[in-house]
Image (tube, rainbow, N blue to C red):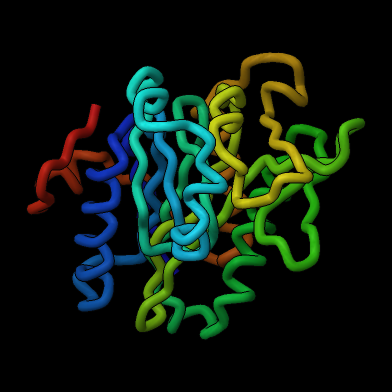
Length: 238
């Protein structure tokens, strides 16, 4: 099956969310092929449906602190609790029609995890799952630390939202939240684990290859101008 892959570069969260909604409608009506968006966001906290009632507990910054650090907060319609997005992090938004794969959200989440685990293996790292907690983890001397958060939405078997993979991410920004509402485990990144900056585009290439392996698709890279011509309110891509 074909999959178009679009690298948006740095894009503000609202624009990416608007774009996802546009692509969702087009995929639902078979106007586009399955699509994987890859991007980075400016400093952002997003709160999924599982965390809306616990924002006061899991968001540690007040409005003034958020403004000082230039962090925006969005309550969104994916699963999961609160997480951080920022530069140096690969965020992936698959817009897939699961009718062409399997009607199984649990398996879909495991396949996203498998994509990240295989990507980590290319860097000599052993990613793992933790039962009952979605995401990908790395064992460290400090205990298991999350390297990739996952939160999705599936409506009429079309997917939205996706994963946030810490590559060169500034992990200090996770101190402003209780990541995913889990207080007894930390976060990590490729940079921290390998003790060096990692070429983000190189990781995106590896990740795309592993995504194709796991989902059994054939990828085609598509320029971001392909989506910039769509009618998307307030889109800001740089």
